[in-house]
Structure formats: structure tokens, C-alpha cells
Amino acid sequence: MNTKIASILLTSTFMAFVSINIAQVLNKKDKGKNTPAEEVSKVTEFKQKSRENLKPYRYDACAVTHFSFSAYEQSKEVELLLFSGTEYKLCFNTEGTPKPIGIRIYDKPSGNQTRALIYEEQNVQGRDVNIITADLEKKYKEMKKSESATLKRLYINYLIPANETKEPLKGFAIVSYGYKNV
Amino acid sequence: MQTAKLFKIALLSALPVFMLASCEGNEEPKNNSNDVVSDQLPVETNEGEELQSSFLPSPLQVAMIFDKSGLEFDPSLVNNPNNLQKYTTKFEKSLNFGAYSADLAYAVLNEKSKEAAKTLKVVKELSSEIGLSTVFDSEDIMTRFEKNISNKDSVLDLLVLIEEKTDDYIEENGEHELGAVMFAGAWIEGMYIGARSAIKEQKKNKDLGNKLSEQMIICGNIIKELETKAQKSAEVDKLIADIKAINDLYHNFESVKKMEGDAAYEVTLTEDEMNQLTGKIIDIRNSIVKE
Image (tube, rainbow over all chains, first blue to last red; front, side, top):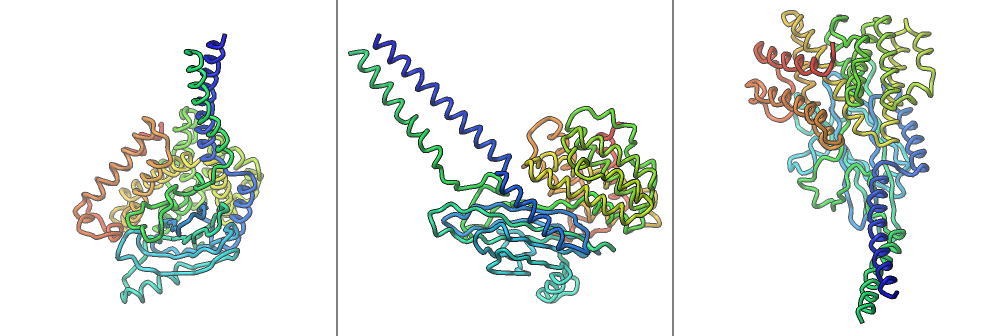
């Protein structure tokens, strides 16, 4: 009788272990696909605000960068292509970050030792940052001391400070970009 | 004795399972899996960090860039709306949704309202078949389109609205694979229209060739997007291989090899190089569009 109970206990334990593992895998997969409804609605609202700020430039695309504040400072990078003869406007919305972040724009990707910092804005939280690429181009030509220096790509870096509390902190930043309609 | 031993084993095995179960709910969210990239590296160790995400320009912007070179409308270049029923798998439908979106932009920019209306209907139909029906459901896009058909600016605003809604759907539903495949289709179709027009107008319009070179900068980003966001399948692998073939061909041209960095996309190709590039683009486009 006791052998039977022990066998049932062993089998149940095994089944529970398998179920928990399956649940964890499914949960992880699910998290990869969906954001909580509240966050989705905030993302939609702030995205719309950043699109509104693009006017009179015509909307082209939008990037939402989600981040979790960890024990270390982090940097997240978004690449943007620029085509000659087109002027662009970038509109950042930072209402989705619970702590101020930094925004830096470079001409080359992270890891490139020769990259140049073209734009920097510190302590950005809950406010809009709007940039016209013609201004970046002008600054870039001055930095490179060359009229022929052109920007074909921009690398936007979000600088996410360390989380000094034990509370988990998450946030997101949005950048929309549009082109001049002429 | 045997039974007691079995009991001990069972209890000891159960312990970690219950510990695991009790920890599950308290797991600290170290990383949001919706983050653009899962790695969280300290700033000082960013060297060598992979690019996290990139913007892909919309089909409308790609069409506008070619349009600036005086691209004239040629109805024989677009994907025939009657081909719609030939696309049966989700992959084919997504890819051709992109191709038709590029055709739509091409028709609108050239103020070909009849062709644009036909293509928009196809785009709408495909959208519902690949899960994008909300794009057209939420606003009466078709009615607004018909009302404003003679006003190019208003129709362009509608195309932008479609883009916004498509982007929102992709973001909110994590359909980045769909986005990557659709964009690949749009880019190939845009390059095809540019290539065919460049062949036709090679002597009088050198700028079109330069625009093709400039557009090659997107190639690497599309490959990256497909490799990171699309699930592996024979169809995706073939698409990646096709786009890589265009990319490799371009970067092996003598005119391109001698340029450094992004200057490689400001090149005026030789006639032979142009012929090779346009030939490759046409082959690949014709393999995705069913005539």
C-alpha cells in the first residue's frame, strides 16, 4: 500500500515538474509577444503624440524602445537611414520613462571608435524632443570641417541610468520620424 | 525499508518542484522580452554590441525618392491586381502585400487614380487575409479614398494613415516577422520599378541609376530584420538568400569596392554594372510576383 502511495507521489512530482516547466516556457513565449494592455494603450497614446509633433513633415516610421532599468547603466541603439535631398524631423516622446534618460545621436554605430557625437540631450523625461536633420547635417559639416561630409545614417542611443532601488523599473521611449513633403 | 526509501526520494524530489513553483510569482522582471534587445550591457562595455533595431523607410518614402528622379508611370511595371488569387500562403500574401503597397504609392505619386483605386482594393483584400483587417476597419479609408481620388495630397495622407495603422498593428501584436516580410516585398517591387525605368531611360536619366545605388543601403537592414525577426522556413531562407545575392553582387562591383563606408552608396555604376544589378533585381522580383 505504502509503495503504491510513494509511486503516486513520485509520478505526481514528475508531472508537476513537467507542467511547471511547460508553463514557464509558454509564459516566456507569451511575454515575448504581448505587452500588458495598459502599457499598449500608453504606447499607442504617446506614439500618436509624437506623430502629431511631426507636422508638417509626413510620417514615415516609428520606433518604440522598451527597457528595464537594471543595476547598471545601459545604452540602447536605434539606426535610422537618411536619403540625400530629403529633410527629416525626429520627434521623441519620453512620457513612458519613469526616470530621466539621455538621448545621444552619433554618425556611426556603438563599438566604432571613430564615431562622432552629433547631438546630446540629458535628463529627458516626460517631455518632447524634436530635431530637424538639416540642423544635424550643418553641425556635422562643421565638426568634420568639410562641406562634403554627409550623414547617411544616424544612430540614436538611449542612455538608461542604473536602478538604485530594489523595485523593478521598466519604461519605454518613442521616436517617430517624418520627411519634408516637397 | 524499501518503501521508506521510496518515500524519502519522492519527498526530496517534490521539494525543489514546490520551491520552483513558489518562486515563479516573485520572479524579478530583469528584462522585458519586448525590449528591442534582450542584452543589458553596462555602457562602458558597449564596444562590439550588436545593433539593436533599425528603422526601415516606408514604401511611400522609397517611391517618393524614385519619383524625385522623374519616374514616369508605366502600367506594365506593376504587379497585376488580377494576380491576387495566385498568392495562397501567408508568406506569399505578406510579401505581395508589400509589393502592391509599393505599386499603390507609385500610382498615387503619378496621379493614376484608376490604377491606384484597383491596387488599393487588392491591398485591402490582402490585408484582411494576413490579419491586418483592423487597418481598414477602423476608418472608412475606402470611402475617403473615393471622395478624394482627384486630390493627390489627400490620397497621400490616406496612404500615410494606412502606414500608421499597419505599424501600430505590427507593434501592438508583436508581428515583426510580418513587418519584415512585407517591407522586403515593398523594397523589391520599388527597386524593380526603378530598375526597369532605369533600363528604359538609361541614356536620358542617369539619376535613376544613382537612386538605385542609394537604395542599396537598405539591403543590409532588410537582411538583418529577416534574420532576426522571421521564423526560419524554406520561403524565408530563399528570400534572405535572394536579397543577399543582390547585396553581394553590388558590393563586388569595382565602382563600389573602391569606396569606403557609406560612400559606397553614392556611386555612379558603369553600364555593365547597372545591367547586372537591374538584371538581378528583375529576376528576384519576377520570382515573387506570379504573372
